[in-house]
Every structure is written in structure tokens, then in C-alpha cells.
Length: 342
Image (cartoon, rainbow, N blue to C red; front, side, top):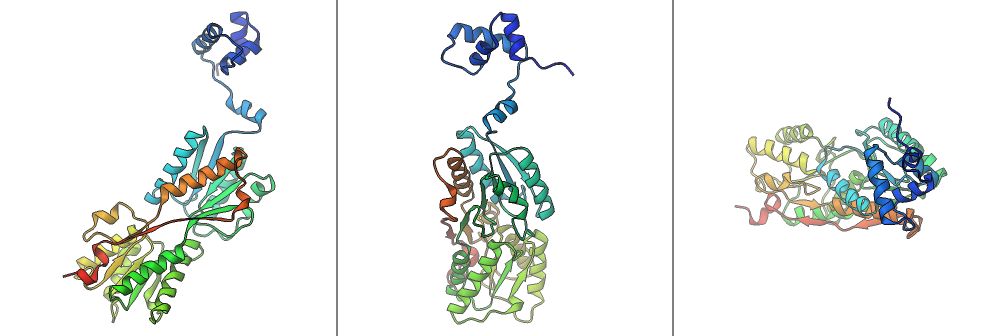
């Protein structure tokens, strides 16, 4: 392998001191513009590359932030990452992004890689089967800041950025009840995760507040995949008494279920009113348009990244708050409007 060009090589050829070359390459005001121009052009000619890693180690800062997400193929997560990238770029930070693929084992490996990469801080949305934050203990011990977003666990060592999923679940279910629904099915995800547990809690509270019973046959725990949506439609088709409302914790799964129900002869919303969650683009492509919760992904990414960077720059101590709660919006479309249907 060819030897890397160093500032000493440039200094020797230009008959300058290494300190002068170093200052010029770092745009130090003490070096005049002609000398800077001479040094930078020679450095470019010789293929010089700044050793950022060594420089950052000296400063005890790498200007990188680690991000661990459950899946990269999610529309919601892509909007979160876009928000993080925007804020990080403006603050001259780089992101190292990895996915756990919904596996705590992979999440543990990712956390170790991030720690060994000396990230300045970490932003994490937890995998389906993560039960504790033990694998982040080295970050806590070394005071490397950690912010959890979307899928979180209560933890005194870090801040959580979320929406009020209990209230969102309550609002969705109440909307369906207001449309005349009395047998509302809820299709949700792994209840180890706060987002799904809280939406189920909101669903049950709304039923209770309106004098409606919670029935086991009307709650389905799934992975919220396309296949789960198809399976839910088949399950509904074979039920002795069909639900008249459907609250699905994912637009992607809801759309698959809706399509299969329509093929099976159900009218939406006349027979079954449907509401999803996340406001994915697919919610506006399906016919009728899918009522959903607008989940502010980009804003969540921006708030999480900005909070972490402000902490790193000494502008804010994230330990002063346990939870940052963002606003959401119920977007009512034709899939749930029974009162105006027909």
C-alpha cells in the first residue's frame, strides 16, 4: 500500500515548518492567503488527506452520532432519519446508522460497534424483543448521552422522545365509536414495545368510557406485516359476528387488510370502518382514502438530534427532562366515515 502523504512531506518540499503547513490546512488566520493557497494546492497535488480520526481523538470528540433503528425499510423511520440528517448536517455532525432488524441480539451488537466507533452520542429506537437497556450500560458509565425515540423504555439515564400513544389510541377508537361502531377490532404489534402497548391501552379506555366491552376475539397481536393484514382479513371473514370498526396500528398492515376485505365483498366504510396509524403515503393511495394518525417523524428526528447536539455542545442538559412529547393529528378520510357513507 502506498504511504500516506503527511504534513511533514508537504513542509519538506515547500521548505516550511510543519506547524505552518498544519495551520494553513486548518485555515488559521495567522497564515497569509498566499501561503495558504500555496500549501493547499501542493497538498491537493500530493493527495494529502486530513487524518480526522487522529485529530478527533486528540480533541476527545469524533463529531459522529450513532443511530440504531429497528428497520430501514419503514416510511416512518425514513422520515425520522431525514430529520436527524438535516439537523446533524447543519451542526457539522455525521450519522452512523444501523438497523437491529427487530432483534435484540443485533441491537446489542450494534451498540457495541457504536461504542467502539467512539460516537459522541446515541439515538435509538428499540427492537421488538428488547426488554431492558443493559447493553447500553457502557454508554451510561462513560456518560455518553443516549436518547430513545418512538420505541422507548422508562430509564433515568436517558431522555425519551415520543407522542402520546395512549391518547392517540383513545382518539382513534372514539372516532370509530362516534361513527356508530360498536364491535371494534384492534390489530396491534408486540406489546413489549410502548407504542403498541399504549395504543391498546387507549383503545380499551375509549371502549370503557363509552360503555363497550373489551373482547379477546377483537384484539389481534401481530407483526403488522402485509401478510398479517391479509391473515386478519381472512380471520374477520370467518367470524360469526363481524366487527364494524377496525383500528390497525400500522397503515401498511391496514391497507393490506382493507384490500383483502374489499375482495371478500365487504364495503368500506359501510360494513367495516377502518383507521390506520403513521400517515404513510400508502394511506392516500388506497380507495377509499385511509383515516390515520399523522405521526410527526421528521420532527421527531429533528428534536431528538437537536436535543443530543445541544447537550454535547453544553447548551442543554438532557438529564433535565425524562420525556419530550410531540403532537400528533387524527387525519379523517373516507375509510372511516360511516355517517356520510352511501
